[in-house]
Amino acid sequence: MHSLNIFCHEFVVAVSCVACIIGLLLLWESKQQRNDVEETEVILFRMSFTYWLVYCVAFGIEKIILPEWESVVMTLKITTALSYFLTFSCILSLPLHKFAVHRVEE
Image 1: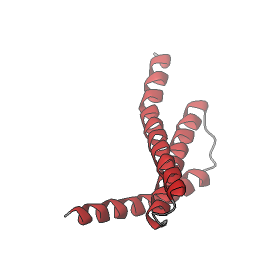
Image 2: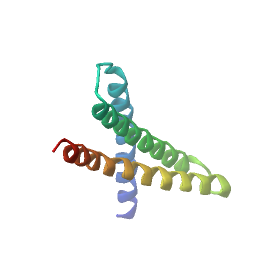
Image 3: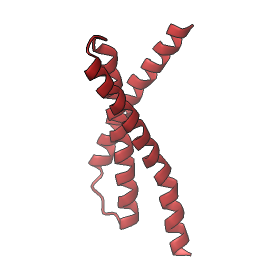
C-alpha cells in the first residue's frame, strides 16, 4: 500500500510538471495590453508555475540520484522544500492581491 501511495505522488508530480510547462507557455504567449493589476496577477501566476516546476524537477532528480550522494540529495531536498513554500506563498498572494485591489477601488 505504501508503494502505491509513492507511485501516485510521483505520477501527480509528473502530470503537474507537464501542466506547469503548458501554463507557462500560455502565459507567455498572450501579449495583450494589460493594466498594472492584471500584470501583477500574470506575474504571480508565472511565479507559481515556475516555482512548482522547480519543485517537480528537483523531486524527479532526487528520485533518480543514487542515495550515496548525500550532499546532492540534501541540496535537492532543500530545493524542493523552498520551492514548495514559494509556490504556496505565490498562490496565497493571488487572492490577497485581488482583495487589496478591491479594497482600494472602494
